[in-house]
Image 1: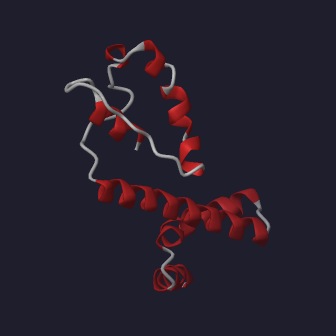
Image 2 (image 1 turned 180 degrees about the horizontal axis):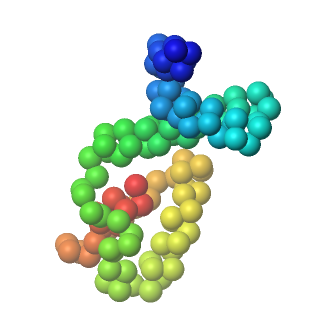
Image 3 (image 1 turned 180 degrees about the vertical axis):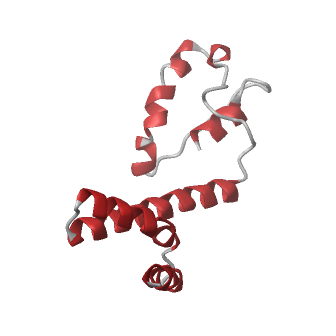
Length: 120
């Protein structure tokens, strides 16, 4: 059973996503007559995507963000217009690349924690 051996090797090499998708990838590769390079590229792309998703999940869990605090449910009407205009730019995340901090301050109940968690 070569497929079982491939899955075992993938798990031993700590390639869990590749182990999960190899069977479907083989079927697709045979059906669409992929070259070996295309098949390997597909498997590696799937592994990279899986690792990225697991990393994001792990970091979000470690951040201990309050549940349900997203921009979709954030009532932006509570904020002054000049602050509302800055939110789309903050969502782009350029401040992260520049290693800049964001200062959020205001009266209690104005949504500071919600905004901070949603941006996170």
